[in-house]
Image (cartoon, rainbow, N blue to C red):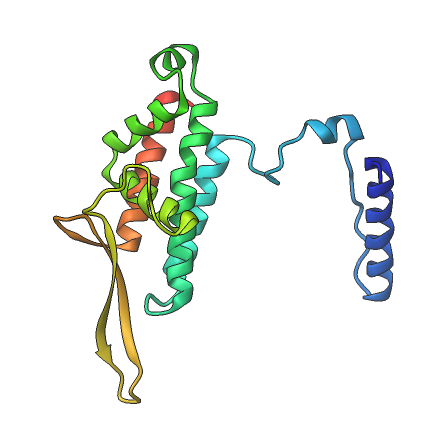
Length: 192
């Protein structure tokens, strides 16, 4: 099925659903197929700053979820992934002189890990959650900890999640905000 036919069917389905579900009709603007094909596949994320705002939103969500729940663990992984993916977004917007310094994205990633301890941790969490374990230069010092903090009167065990880097223990929020703050300052300095 070609793109124009797919768009037509999408619009028909939206109108059908709006009619039978009693939803207010909304005007749906679909870009012309030629410009549509040139769009990213990232919904509204277009620039590094957009990804940074997403990271900020992810961390805000993390803070609303009770830290002893599995949902908190899932959201912490989402935050780590978003923080580490910022490398891709920022690298894409580097100016020519920065590109000469970092001709390959791998070199840029290594530079970022050396500059920001929080992102070194996020890289470990993001890649380990994606691949189950790390095979590419894992840090033996970085790990996650789930600690039983107390038992409620009803017998429910309340756990707390932490990150350990071989020297100190950090809350997930501390790691994620540290990564966010690094990227915010980095983007400000690069004016991206």
